[in-house]
Image 1 (tube, rainbow, N blue to C red):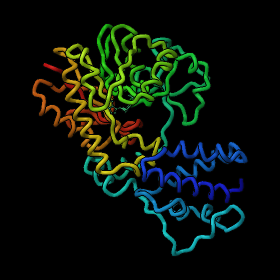
Image 2 (image 1 turned 90 degrees about the vertical axis):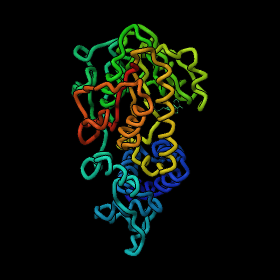
Image 3 (image 1 turned 180 degrees about the vertical axis):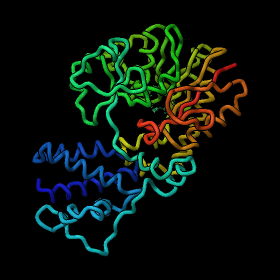
Image 4 (image 1 turned 120 degrees about the vertical axis):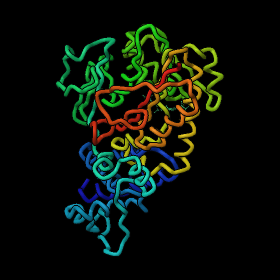
Length: 392
Ligand SMILES: C[S@@+](CC[C@H](N)C(=O)[O-])C[C@H]1O[C@@H](n2cnc3c(N)ncnc32)[C@H](O)[C@@H]1O
């Protein structure tokens, strides 16, 4: 593909990404893969270049752009070499008309940027949400140890005890250590919040929103495969991905429970009053993970945010019934919005006088209300809120 054709391809893909964001359709990654699946003429260099162009444009536009061309023009405004590729040649974008619409820049749609700013995420901290994430792995303590594990590349030791950092795109999933379950891909911040559960061998621990089990596997390692570890979710497809991962990781104690949405208590009834710890890695807006999927900020609406925060409150309330006396809840969201963090947890503590806040010391992050907030700017991790409370 010529450089011009790559720009035109990126514009077409951006049109699809924007349309998908408006109707809550497929994520950008999948749209890009699908686009290339039907265009076999494109080589690996073309794919990389087009991908870079698409993500560069997504990052550059705050509000949802009118279309792919307007988004690409936003980048071209500050990049003369890119602007020169709009030359109207074969497979090239048509020349730029000075009167045509250019998408608005910024960190996010205006309402969302304002909400973040209210929570202290503005300027550099907000821009860092759109940086590029490195690739972090967790050495699986069930099978190996960071101090002695030899990997094809050394990696930088992270604060999380088994965490290692590599440059983005390091092909770790092709390494023997990965196929043998000695390492898992997991953001360093995610590893730290798993540590906040302080899961111990022999305990009964519920991972209430386990998804495909990223945190379940870390909990199994912390528990040394001793005790009960119950991974729950309402999403059958996600939860079904846990079993093969657990097998690879040797996480023998992980059990799963598929729950019906809004009827979670029925599936959990046999477990009431029995847990030492419940991790609620709650569904959230994902504002802390925009480095990985920056178009997510175009999908979020105020109505969706209200819907998600209501689920978070419901799950927090539900988790109290699962605890034995002295048992603890660890509430986590990968969001930097206070309504999904400090405010949500403060409201929970008010609703449940029998729950006492537990101070956390992650060795990182900033205190936010009754919890700790990790952020790309402050900690070089994805953004998280984490807080804990104990049943008196
Ligand atoms: C942040 S993700 C979990 C990620 C996972 N813990 C990990 O570390 O890979 C939130 C999960 O909450 C699940 N979820 C949504 N509504 C739920 C509900 N009512 N009860 C339990 N889980 C729910 C979603 O299906 C999703 O898998």
